[in-house]
Image (cartoon, rainbow, N blue to C red; front, side, top):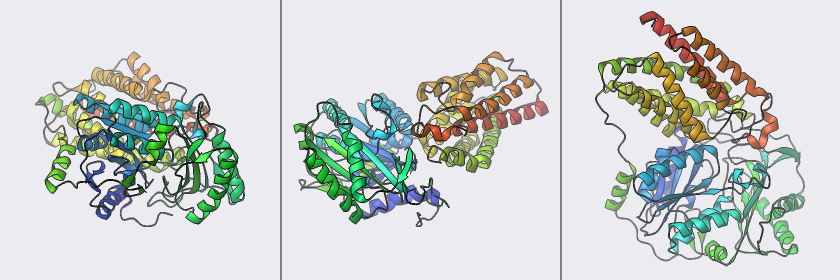
Length: 579
């Protein structure tokens, strides 16, 4: 288990504090993550994802690898604000590359950050890592997630930037590296989040789980644990079967320990891996054996093959000097002065949307009711958090409940602060949405943050919030979530509730309380109906069969919130103003 922590909620921030204290000449903390503490004048490569994977991601910030890392909560993507802040600190005028594993939450948050940076005039591109062959079949490589193969892409990008490649060429070679990288992993036991009493998943004694994820997702099937040599053969067979078209016979090899497998065990496995690869006619170039991308205390290993050409080999073998990844000898670097560190921190800590247009008395009055509704939403989520986590853990990583609770609390606090400053309903919801996305992270954080901002945008600060305005705002939230998430009815997501609910809202008389209650009741039925669906998107997709019989966590939480807020608003309205 993960035993050493103070308050589990503070674990991500405290580990960054300790990491920076341990490497003060190499990295510095900024809001949202860490950046190099040395001078450079090149394209900025920013890696990122949830914490719990050290040495990914902060341990790879250094010469020859990454320039910065945006770091979210445990196993949860950094928020758009975190990624944006880190990029602002890392940018040196040559553009920014975000690179991360292909997880829905990361795609949403880094994507929003990229949009904001481009609006600031900072050219920004994204390079996804999709190396995990277990997460989608051949022909659907774009749907695969990133695991330990992150390292080959990160190293290639960082080395290319260090050689002076411009933004377009850096992106080109990074995507080429991803296309040439394949990984497959197994787990012998699940990992335990700080403060949790049980692991996210278990594996039967004497068995291993094939095709695990690095966020606590279990594998796709369980088989008896073989001898080390047979396991090595299995790993090599699975990865070699997906040799990229046109690949040569020179490969980089990563044998990765996921948290508690000992180095001695890894070397025993690697001895057979190296022999089999040689027998297959492959030449191994600069292999790495050790902990390269972990999952807290998970017991497991993964094998990555990175097929090289002349350019990729040169970049892969070039020197690097990150705290957790050192190769060769890099040239001397110049430490940033105290003044420069302060300037970069100030640049990262961009001002919040503290200012807003004056709110009308009517909007401020509506804002108080909005705050009360957010309070009901938050209490509903808190009460359901454990059950939502249990549902999510069936085929995901079990963090939906805690993520929703974290986001709802943050939104409520931000909205209350805005209302205390005499903001109206629109600003209160907009700030609440920003706080939800920033604090919760993950897919649900991005989508709920976008929804609250969309609703706030429709309410504004000039007019009272009316029943028709609420209906219109729900449709705006639907449109924004659909734009960002890309899910459809039948994908087993929150959209299985939201899309039909929005259609009903569009058709009802907004002044008819009975119609609103019926729409909420049907939302609950729609959430329950997701039991029979097979997930087609997100982390649950590789474990689709396991989720059948269990409702979708996102759909369930949305239905609970719709019901609770509807009951509250209608009850409140009946007391004060039946119209």
